[in-house]
Image (cartoon, rainbow over all chains, first blue to last red; front, side, top):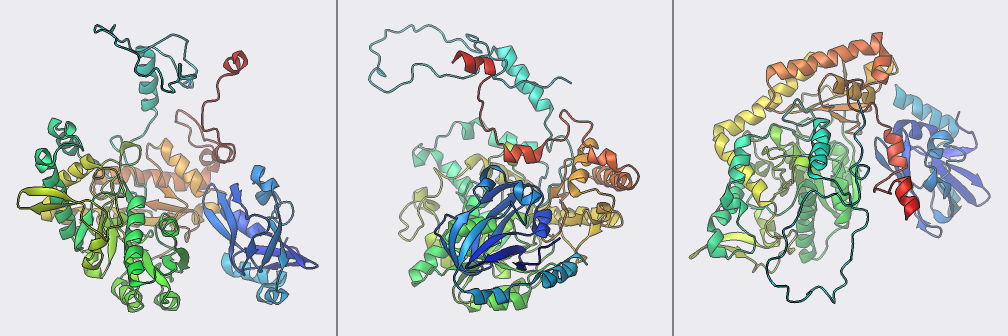
Amino acid sequence: MYPDNFYYTKDHEWVRIEGDKGTIGITDFAQKQLGDVVYVELPAVGTNLEFHQTIGVVESVKAVSDVYSPVSGEVVAVNTELNDSPELLNEDPHGKGWMIQIKIRDDSELQKLMTVEEYEKFLEGLEE
Amino acid sequence: MIREPLIFEISNEGKSAFSLPNIDVPVKEDILKNLPVRKEIAGFPQVSEPELVRHFTRLSKTNYCVDEGFYPLGSCTMKYNPKVNEKIANNHKFLSSHPFSPIDLVQGNLEILKMTEELLVEITGMDAFTLQPSAGAQGELVGMMLIRALLEEKGDPRKIVLIPDSAHGTNPSSAHICGYKVQEVKSNKSGTVDLANLLNAMKEDVAALMITNPNTLGVFEFDIKKIAEIVHAKGGFIYMDGANMNALIGNCRPGDMDVDVIHLNLHKTFSTPHGGGGPGSGPVGVKKELIPYLPVPLVEKGEKGYFLDFDRPKSIGRIRSFYGNFQVVVKALAYVLSLGHEGMKEVSEIAVLNSNYIRKCLEEDFHLEYKTPTLHECVFSDKFQKVHGITNLDIAKRLIDYGVHPPTMSFPLIVHGALMVEPTETESKRDLDIFIDAMKKIAQEAKTNPNVLKGAPHETYVRRLDEIGAARNQVLKWEGTAAQNEKD
């Protein structure tokens, strides 16, 4: 279910690393908890993000939630398709529902994140 | 049933619901001649008087209101609005007084404002009040602006506002608009502020803690004085969201709990109409230290009677035109005076009793995430029904079929699939039993006939609305019929 080449956070974001770039989104667990997403707010390309800084907002019929950056760096791309099709976050959270791409400043921060095994174990704890 | 058309769809060119008499005085000149006045207003609906009256009367019959039945919207305190309040507020002396009237002619109105302020001071244990804010959210903003103004004068407005995860949803937004970064404080297992977490988070860059007491679980923060001590020790302030004041009124006072700033909702606790029936009113009360910063003007009494005091150099300024929603204040004052001390105590006692009656009767049918004793509201969840594929949304929709307004849903966020029920003191045991009976039937239906819940409501003017579609594809204004657009 959860890709094994991603890193995960306790706030249910994921990051996929390719070279010095990281693609960021929210996990399947997060989209299920939120329910149908109706609006996504993303940062501008060029924004400098600190570790755990708010990158945007996801609004569903039930709730509005902040999304935090799992790593620090500069935003190099945002998924503008989410403006018109926020449902991509529900339909394909680990793929087409990606939110932003970031140029990673400090890859030692990845050590603070969870591997897929750790994340799945973390979820079991939540679903008790 | 036929769908009621939009008023634009029944519009016909040239129809009108009024006719003006001909001018019977000489026309000197067209004084608007040189001004950029529109020659015609395109797109306004044109209908006759009977069409107009019938359209809105038919629409009103599809509505649901507190005069019609139970309205258990948690943390909104949808209590009955006594008609005597309306009668008093609609006295022609109030209706015909104008905000620009000379002060000498509105001494009675000013006395009403002053008297209400003083009564709110007594009820809350604060030192002074402003009645200006239009409603709760503006009250929150004003409260935070007062704190900011004082801290700025001391040299540093600070950066962070702490908000428990069980607080009211508007609090983070008010703090943010006031220029603060919001930091959440996690609750403990009993659903109250975790003191260890608070101690950890309370640093010298924290301006205030915004706390809702009782919180949105309906749980009283018994540690409120310790919480205030922790925050005050680092020079921060306690802001209390008074939306749940109906649980406390007459029995204890936020001022005695070392709260520095509070807003009240006259349209909740003080029985003035709410929501679409408003407008609201969100008075803000403060302790002495913050009085100099209150918005201008304040009503004061001098040698020659009441006057409006604008000479307040430290004030954050005016935050509302004129003096707030004056007639709402009149209704609230009527409410307070008609209840008196003893009546006020009974309000919160019966509100708490009603909520606990519901909680006890339904605790086997609906899951209670937190077992801590609650005051005026209780939060169930859909956990027992989820195994049958039923969510809180289905339960809420089915309640409509049983003639009850659904409770607050999916809030607080710390309870998944939440149903927040606040009955208020104005419901009789009979009305509470109707609700309890409906909820029990729904719990049964979830097991035996879940499809009837999935498809609910069945008995209403419109069936289940596509809430997701409505949020994703917002149509916010009339775009014209295809025929009209073609003509243009």
